[in-house]
Length: 338
Ligand code: HEC
Ligand code: HEC
Image 1 (spheres, protein in one colour):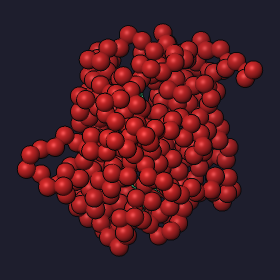
Image 2: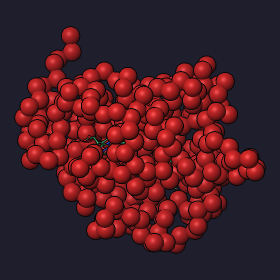
Image 3: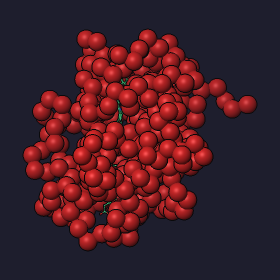
Image 4: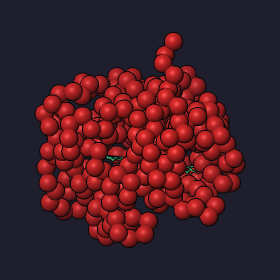
């Protein structure tokens, strides 16, 4: 891929701006509330593992990127026995060759919990090397200490997978252009579930909705003013498809109600229209109704952003997000900052 092409990474500053900073005050009171609903006979260890499974399998879509996928089969399933074993990242926009690593105990057996947590939230690999930000650590940075501990527990419990993977081939100048890694030095807590919209925002960050539904510029940085307004293009074995505008603008999803939203996340069908399954419904179908409701409540608080995006019409240049996509011709350029 040519240098200067759209890259699937963004600066952590921009990611933080997209994610919003959680209010530690509210969140601290509610650590217990963040866990999965408890079942009576579960030990704390089982509860943590169940929470980790939920986050890995249904929220953070870890295994979509970290498993070999059958892109020819409907719904793009993981290949049997390859779960967590790593895979070549197939989106054409990445510079060079990006390979997700094997995250099963086969590869991470000697790493400490702390090292795995740092890989997830800070982008420092277990071997101390820096991770390329296709691994979405800029978003997982928002993951609470409890949640990342649960994710680590579940990753450690995956069945070991033995696999040969090619090495990353990322041009030096791309590495050099990345912002320096940032450590997490203060406790990270999730917002209280009772603050539905705030908890929904948390889920849209660690569930990467904001990453896939915000268009990026040539350098991979989100375009100001277009948060959740769609138009980010995904080009790979699944086809060429743009993320949808999720804001309540007439060009977004103003007509959705919670029932339709739940149906879309669980089935990838918007009434009769079937979505491309690069939208990770196969994973989101396990989202609880409570979490779906929180995400919907949060999306309803977004300012409407006018940005027509369609995957039914042929791509045309868009002066708003800079990426050609269906109905691109309808969009005006972003007004210059005052
Ligand atoms: C969009 C794709 C993507 C998603 C989603 C993703 N990862 Fe990754 N991950 C990667 C890539 C690519 C790398 C390797 C980057 C590199 O080698 O520079 C990586 C690296 C890692 C590493 C470092 C392994 C090592 O050897 O140090 C861990 C641990 C990890 N990911 C865990 C997770 C977990 C847990 C989740 C979900 C909460 C997750 N990843 C979600 C793409 C992804
Ligand atoms: C890996 C990227 C990716 C992630 C992560 C992702 N989406 Fe999507 N989403 C897409 C793409 C691409 C489409 C457009 C699919 C199509 O039109 O066929 C889409 C479509 C949708 C639609 C349908 C809109 C419509 O009516 O046309 C909704 C709703 C949606 N996403 C919500 C979400 C939510 C909520 C999350 C997080 C919980 C999320 N998405 C995470 C890529 C993603």
